[in-house]
Length: 305
Figure 1 (tube, one colour):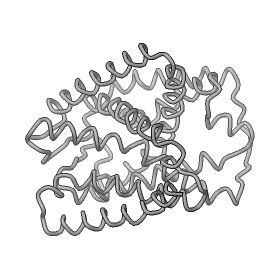
Figure 2 (figure 1 turned 90 degrees about the vertical axis):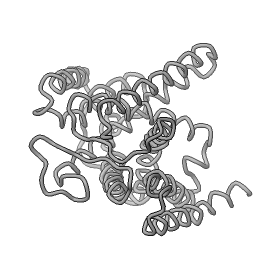
Figure 3 (figure 1 turned 180 degrees about the vertical axis):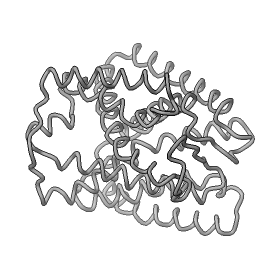
Figure 4 (figure 1 turned 180 degrees about the horizontal axis):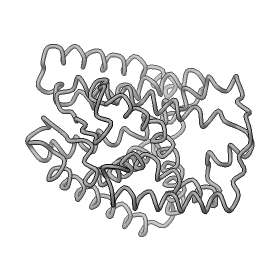
């Protein structure tokens, strides 16, 4: 009963933090100006999670707080893979971040930890509406040949991105779908391919729309934040909406599908390591070292001082 009250109260708590942060930003408060993006996203996650619970009596925070923390932790890992791509494609830079390294790195962690929870919350919210209208369209059979083609195209896409980044940088928002969906299918994890075999399109549609909604909010919050990123795309750098070129928003749609694939693959890995304490501890240490290394690379090559 207390848990349910807290989950319902999160709607008002999130709204309060979001509105207060916006008000203090207008007043040019130094702390909020620097941390507005993180404050806005995490308050939004509280709001959407509470709405999800109110609609279906289920939400990521209500199901398992421990798993929610795991999702936030692996979210940092997933986004840092795209930061590594950006070292090559150079599509965005960070500007006006805190001068102190420790504050900046905590900011990286908090901001990147919001990616998977945010998209997942929005997808679940959208899907709650789709449940009334079943999208049973045509069937796509996940044959062995199709899965192998997916893997080949995913690997080839990574090669193209690294070899000719100015031409093929959009593939960074596609390649992990082709690499991970077959793996999830073979491992019997949740996949879009398995849904499409059963002519169930609602989950796919929910995540695509969630990608667009999350992308809009990412760019909206970033536009007003003091600490922010800016884009410089080779041949799409026109018609900006906030900081993002208009055609760049199309990348958020497949990016959400990549988030879905990563989430289910890493959740499977977590379950496999759950009882293997030593291996799990080594994995956590490796991830923390990976985070520190990537934060250093961001500071060195992506941050504009």
